[in-house]
Amino acid sequence: MEILAACVIAVLVACGVYLVLRARTFTVVLGLSLLSYAVNLFLFFSGRLTTGAPPLAASPATTADPLPQALVLTAIVIGFGMTAFVVILALRARGELGNDHVDGREDKP
Amino acid sequence: MSHWIILPLLLPLAAGMLNLLLTRTGTNAQRMVSFVMACVLLAIAALLLSRVAAGHIDVYELGDWPAPFGIVLVLDRLSALMLALTALLALPILAHACLGDDRRGRDFHVFFPLQLLGINGAFLTGDLFNLFVFFEILLIVSYCLALHGHGPDRTRNALRYVVLNLIGSSLFLIALGVVYGICGTLNMADLGLKIASLSQDQVPLLQAASLLLLTVFGLKAAILPLFLWLPGLYAAVLPSVAALFAIMTKVGVYAILRVQSLIFTVHGPVDHGAALLLPLALITLGAASLCVLGSTGLRQLLAWLVVVSVGTLLAGIGLWSPDGISASLYYLPHTTLVTAGLFLLADHIANQRGAAEDQFKPGPPMSRPDLLGTLFLLGAMAAAGLPPLSGFVGKVLLLHAAGPAHAVSIWTVVLGGSLLGIVALGRCGSTLFWKTDGVPLSGATVSWVRVAPAAGLILAAVALAAMADPVTAYTKAAAEQLLARHEYIEAVLGGGNP
Image (cartoon, rainbow over all chains, first blue to last red; front, side, top):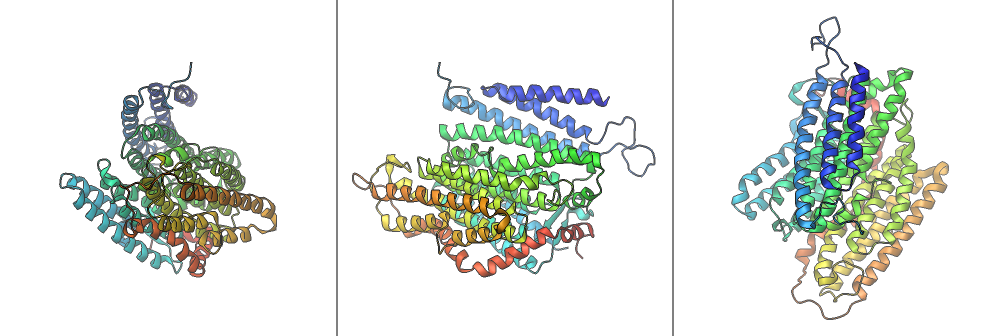
């Protein structure tokens, strides 16, 4: 289970990093979204993978840690807001600079 | 438990929301609200400074949940100093913005208080995840402020800044996940305790997390090789926004200082970050000094000076001695206030020169070269570190703190950097003020009143030099408090204050 979770995060991060390094704003935004998915999963898993365990520390057996869920909720909300902002900014850059290159100017042929 | 601590957060939040409601009423009402907020904030910061000056650490438990379960705000000497600096910086910048910058776009007076909220929150919080949240608050407001006033140049630079910081936020969260997964807590004082009882196989993972955190804070503070976003952005945004951003890199420096002195200490098991700081700082300082010499405009030059100051600050901090940190804490208010003042002055200079703006090429002569020139001379002397102003005092303290072990590297880089700074600022001043052609522009007016905010900030260098004795006594005490980290941990985990 841990191996599978680690692989999912690794693939997401790899795709995210590849896309973020592209030169067009659209792929960069996609890459940022993939990165934030990976980060959210990672944060979620930092409380360890448990199934069917109660979320309270008082019970004697294994417990599910509730704090990472609270953390990841905050991270999701913030990531969502930031992604919305960067989408609008990318649109405005397309309008003002006349192209969707991250540097604001096309490569010379 | 005193409720004063949370006021630096509640007050800007309330002012920002009130200004949002006043959008339709017009800018004048919003200006009034912002001014009242900035003045009260300054008074509160002064009060908080006097509360902790004796060495007492104030802890505020939100919702009365005891640490480490609840979120705490912690006010020690360092936090109080940073709060006071922010409030001191905000007032003149607001005054300058009201000369016209605030009308160049929408909602300046909504974003300005919220920016102060994010900055104050980062200085006050005692919880690592809460630090992330306040970083995001100050970042998203800074995106809006960076874009204030429009312009393709602004959009181009802001896009890079936003994308870089979003990647930085992802790294921050990964580091937090690792830290939480190992230690089971994100309260900074609790982390400071738990770091001592790690098993051997956990140390490398936490080393990685500490270096990730250093990377994130280094991106905010603009240390090499993460500083390339800064000069373009600071030169492109409105001058009053650039002046406010002078404190943003210091938030990164503060975060490095706080986390590395409390959790990942240089003598503890997780020490890579703290040990790396000095070489990184010196490389940043050296590279930025060369870039200062190569700038083509005044605002670009000032932006590189911001990076130079970050290198100088981290060099002092990287010594991890009371003298080194104390020197940095004295240099920090000096460099923030003077750089902000010079950014505001650059606005007046650019307005007087018409199409030549702040570029280093001949332009029309200014209508008041005496006034602007004197202020520029004072600001340049302070920024370059010439006696008798505060930059000189700060650099002497730093060189004195270096000691025989680091004398060769620090003396060489700091003094070499200062020399390059003097050459660059001298060339800049002579080009802007003496190489003129044509007749003065008729439209551009400048008077004592309009220049007053910039003058106030630059004259802070004189005040800091005159008050060097009490200020260094305070920064020395703050540095010793930081290095005696058990005081902080006991204050937070001891159930707060009665």
